[in-house]
Amino acid sequence: LEMQRDLLHWDQALKLAHTLAPAQVPELSVEYAQQLEFKGEHENALKMFESALNSVDADGRTPLCTDAQQATCMSGIARCTLRLGDLRRGIKYVREANDTQLCRECAAILEGMNQHSEAASLYEAGGLFEKAAAIYIRKLNFAQAAEIMHKVKLPKLHAQYAKACETASKFAEAAKAYENARDMDSVVKLYLNQLGQPDKAFEIVRTTGSSNGAQLVARFCQEQGDFRGAIEFLLMAKRSEEAFNLAKLHGQMEMYTRVLGD
Image (cartoon, rainbow, N blue to C red; front, top):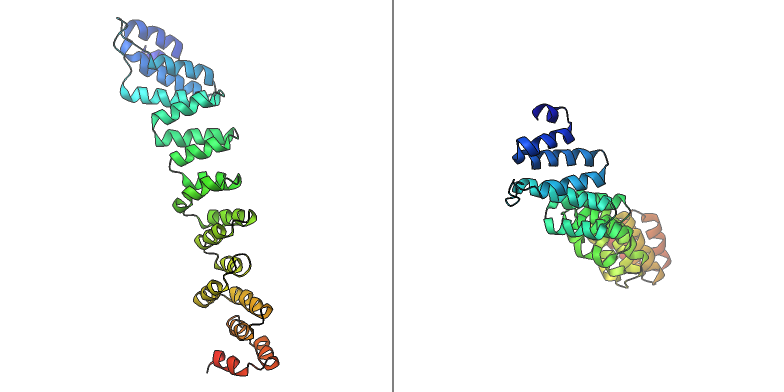
């Protein structure tokens, strides 16, 4: 029995184990099932995992499978069931197992099968919020994405979510996401144009001192006829010559010199 096991002759080893060492049947079945799964023989692996799970003693009563082996079998059954295309049953097994690592493994399997919604849901259950968010954003599932974006740390994902929201005319959500992505110039642009809250844009630029943001605000002020504001933000954008010409043209030299300071 030990020789057949070491040679990975699983069928022969199992036949011997049933006669000589029934207690070893679950362990042998699990090892055999794992090898079959690794080789991509998912149907046979599924049968072997189920066989290990249903192993009983000679009287047919006492289960021989330990708790650890049962957990291994249920994880294997879930993975193989998904790979064989029975998604509903496979996902049910994953949910019942309540195992973080299994959720992550099965999410990757589903993503590879282009079952994106199910994959994202299991990534979320497995605590991989970045992976779940990436799928929700790609599929424009704003409701699901919004629920987990506060758990996402990557600025890149917040920026993608912001762009998706902006494209869908969800400007308030986009502004918040751009802020989480630390892209304050895009926040300024939204406050100026889409959200109609220029005062907030002015406040942001005065705080950040962003040259690009200052140019956006200066252009907005000029369009609104607010030349005092335009001069202030042109100087902040290091465009002093343009600010000087504007001040001379509109009689705002006092404002120009006050902002310019010493």
